[in-house]
Image (cartoon, rainbow over all chains, first blue to last red; front, top):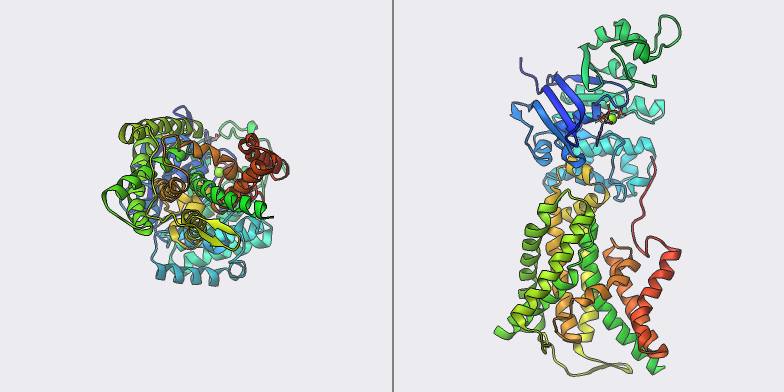
Amino acid sequence: MSALLALSNVQVLYDHTIEAVRDVSLEIEEGRIVALLGSNGAGKSTILKAISGILGQEDGEIVGGSIAFAGHDLRRASPASIVARGLVQVPEGRALFATLTVEENLVMGGYGLSRADTETGLEEVYSLFPRVRERRGQISGYLSGGEQQMVAIGRAIMAKPRLLMLDEPSLGLAPQIIDSIFDTIVGLNGSRGLTVLLVEQNAQLALSVASRGYIIENGRIVLDGMAETLRTNPDVQEFYLGFGTSGTRKSMRDVKHYKRRKRWLS
Amino acid sequence: MDFLLLLISAGLVSGAAYGMIAMGFALIYKATGVVNFAQGELVMLTAYVAFSIAGAVDLGFWSLLAVTVPIAMAIGLTLERIFIRPMLGEPAFAIVMVTIGLAVILRGVTIMIWGPDPLDFAAGLSREVITLGPIPFYPAQLYAIGCLAILVGLAYGFLRYTRVGIAMRAVAANETAALLMGVSVKRIHAVAWSLSSAIAAVAGILFAANFKLGPDMWFQGLRSFPALILGGLDSLIGAAIGGLIIGVVETLAQGYLGQGLREIAGFVVIVVILMVRPYGLFGARDIERV
Ligand SMILES: Nc1ncnc2c1ncn2[C@@H]1O[C@H](COP(=O)(O)OP(=O)(O)OP(=O)(O)O)[C@@H](O)[C@H]1O
Ligand SMILES: [Mg+2]
């Protein structure tokens, strides 16, 4: 079996000194939804930045390990070439081009495309998100959080992804909006076999749509397995799903191998 | 009344020059977040290049422009490649220092090649006076105002409707997100430098035709600062309008208040306006929501 995306022993330093991620290995098979779960500062976004080749923006660097996408080594690839291969990211906090209109944001998502492909791409995004079509001429910075997340996902879809990485798409959104966005993601996965790497703090939600999950703490993968197995794992239940056996949630500090603080949402 | 109209028309002409120079500044600032302190020197250098071309072949104004602009773009690309590209990722302050160094180098090179004395340069334009209503104009004056209008139109179309232009605004809005969309930020910076040099060439030729071509012309870069800041630093159209306003205010101050006030009038205007509108007349405010 060969995974579509494979990370092996990836280590990332910021400013040559701060180790944010250590020995991270994960594999994503084509057509799957895989969840990457962890608390604040665990290293989730760092892993996505490493995959997209944009660590340089923050003085970060991959100092060990390898990242392969469809057999190609990505460690020294440019962000543009990574996108061109179909590995596309919806960054944390949407990161829209706030001063551009909604449609201009989408056009930028398909930056490498021909004019005709841009047109069909826009049509596709608009039929996926009718709300985005209504707002196409507006300055994106003034949209609501939910609309912005739709534009951010639409912008990534414009790039014709083979694997879509989403960094905490549920963050700060109302439950119905989260449901509709997750329905869309699951729909894309089902209808066209889009592979998804879903980064979330909301473990309940993520494990309900993913087939596999990885749990990261302090820059290391501490647990991985089928979503079903993770959901029934007592530690995960206690610390990530909020089902403390004692009825009250224990502090993370009480348990040796989980050292991180965390607000257990969901 | 005629005196007032005369002052306003003279103000619009020098304002058009400020506006074109400030547009070059604004373009590089918008795309790269750096004020290019060598912009005035680029204006001067490209004007001298045009002078030499006009000396070698007899060209009308538009043909001279058509030959000079591509050369200016090549100069801009080369300077970006040699001086600015290696600084990518360094703090803006360090890059600004490099542009100051570049400015000094360009001044030296200009004097080495063309000598220290002012030159007469008609830029393929006639010097016959045209009267529009009660006001006499030299053709070069009308061309300056006309070219400013053309540049504004081109800049608007470029930033709004072309893919590279939209990408330039995207890089200005969120550089990391632009990278994530496959935009090459390096390419966008290079495009900004070459287009800014093209604008500098138009500005330089018309300034030289209206005033004079001399090795102190780089100083017009600093004189255009009030226009740039008034327009909001990152707005090309704002820079053009800012230029016209500053030009008119300066000549009115000179005409009614006295020579010495011309130099400070522009700076007084920006101090007053920035107190009311800290982002200038057209600058992008940070949109904060989420
Ligand atoms: N630019 C940076 N420079 C230095 N350290 C950084 C930088 N970015 C992240 N870090 C550190 O790396 C670690 C991992 O951060 P990362 O952003 O990957 O976490 P995360 O899992 O995405 O957290 P969150 O859920 O809060 O988004 C943290 O300890 C953080 O402080
Ligand atoms: Mg994060």
